[in-house]
Length: 133
Image 1 (tube, one colour):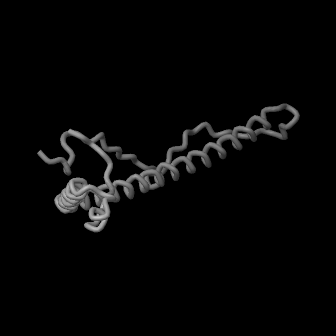
Image 2: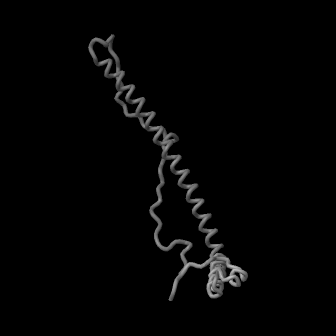
Image 3: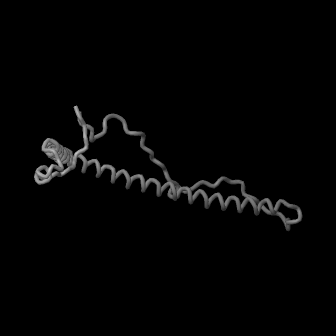
């Protein structure tokens, strides 16, 4: 078996002028037909796979937007807690006390409508839907 690079899409004129061997032209023509046949045989499956990947990208984008919103909410809450902590610490310094202050030690929980529940699916198992037996 000999493998070599040949000029693709060679014409009969190129063969006549000696630029391309007739065997190379015939071999390349067969390769072109096989490539076209392969595209036609797998086009529908590739389109379905492409649609699957597009939907997956949209789902990932939506998921990441939720994660970013959660991070922003946590960051804002953390900032508020730090500001509250700083103001309480300043009140504990004797020269800053102007009288008595009641400090609440209750834990605040998010209202059910303000909380988010993450539903993370496990990794896919088995054969992919595009896999052929």
